[in-house]
Length: 71
Length: 142
Image (cartoon, rainbow over all chains, first blue to last red; front, side, top):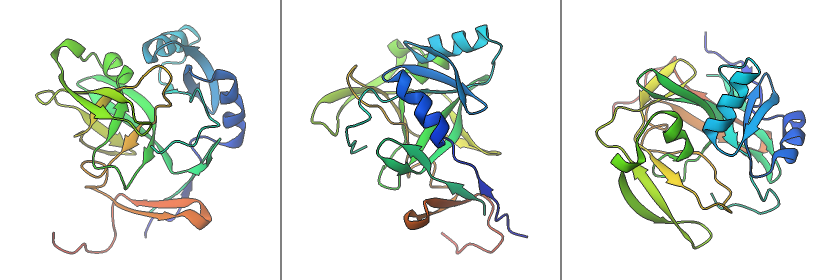
C-alpha cells in the first residue's frame, strides 16, 4: 500500500513565534522548541549538549524576516 | 508517498524539510527548502565546520547573491558527503556558502542531488508537497 500519511510541519506556528526572539542567531531545536542558541552552528550544538540534547535540529534564524527573500 | 506540510515562516508557508548532512561519522540535522529552481543544493558554510571540513582545503568560487552582493562558495570535491532524507541516504553534490553577516541564509535542496532519487510534487494551494521516496508504481526508463 502506498504511504499516504502526512508528516507534520518542520516549523509550526508555535516554533515560528519562538524564533522571532532569535533573529540572526543560530538555534538548536528539539521536540519543537528552541533549547539553545549561539553565534555559530557549532556554538548552538555545544550549548544544546549542555542541556542534554545531543541531536538537535540546527539552523540560523533570519535576521530580517520581514524581507522577502528571493532564495 | 507521504505528504509533507509546508512550514510556517514570516513570509508565508514554505516547503521545508529536515535532512541530515553526513561526513563520515559526523552529521548534523538541519532545515532546508525544497527548491525546484535551484540547480544545486546550497548550505550555510557553518555546517561545514560542524562536519569537520577544513575551509582551507576547499575549492572556492564566488557567487552573486539575490541581493546583488557576492559570497564565497566552498566545495570539497574529493570528500564524500551525503544527505539523508528520512531513511534514504545519497551523495551530496552541492556547495557551502559563506553568507554575508547581514544576509538571510536559506539552505536549499536542489536538482543535482535531492531531486534525483525522488519524485517531488508541490501543491501550493493546499500547502503540502509529496516526496515519493519509494514509488509503488514502475518509473519510466531514464
